[in-house]
Image (tube, rainbow, N blue to C red; front, side, top):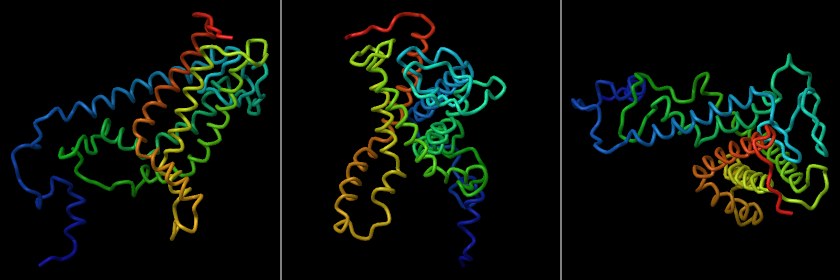
Length: 274
C-alpha cells in the first residue's frame, strides 16, 4: 500500500534509490552525449578566464571615442577621463581596485541567474544532469529550494539592472559616431563592433523569460490588453532564440572589449570610414 512518502524518498536518493530499475550500465546512451556539456563548459570557462583578466586589469578600456562594455558605466573615481562622455565617477578609488569590479556584478548577476545559463553550467560543470537520460552523480536532489541556489529567484530583479546597463551601453555606442576630438558625424570599425554588440545585448535582454512575464504575465484575457499581447508576441519570438542570443551576446561583449583593448593599447589604429 502506498504511504505517500515514496516521491520524497526517491527525490532524496535520486536515480540511485532502490525503487529505480537496477541495470548494470550507468546509462544506455551510445552517442557522444558528453560532447555538448564539454563544449558548454569549455566555452563558459574561456569567457570566465578572459573576463576575469580584463576585469582585474583596470587599464586599456577607453580609446576615444570607444569605451569597453566591461567598464561602462565607469563608477570609480579613478576612471580614466573620457572625452565627451558622462562623468560617472561617484565611488571612491576602493584601494585601487579596477573600476570594472563595481559594475560587472549587475550584468554578471543577470547572466548567472538566467534560465538558459543555469542549464548550461548545471550540465557543463555540475553534471546535474550532464545530458538527457544520463544520471547525475549526486546522491541527493534538492533543486533550487535551498541556499545558495535559492538565490536564483532574484533573476527578475537583476533584469531591471540589466536594462539600465543596456541603456548606458546604447549611449556609449552612440558616442562611437564621433572622432577622437569629439566631433560627430564619423564612424569607424569600432562603431560597427559596438553596434553589433548592443544589438545582441538588447536582443538577449528582451528575450529573457522575466521580460516575457513582465509584458504578458498575470493577464486573464489577452483581448483586453492588445498592446501587451503584441509585446508578448514579439518577446516570445525572441525567447525562442534565447539560447542562441545568450551565446552570441556573450561572444560579442568579449569581442567588443578586446577590440577596445587593442585600440587603447596601441596594437593598431581604428579604421575610420568617414
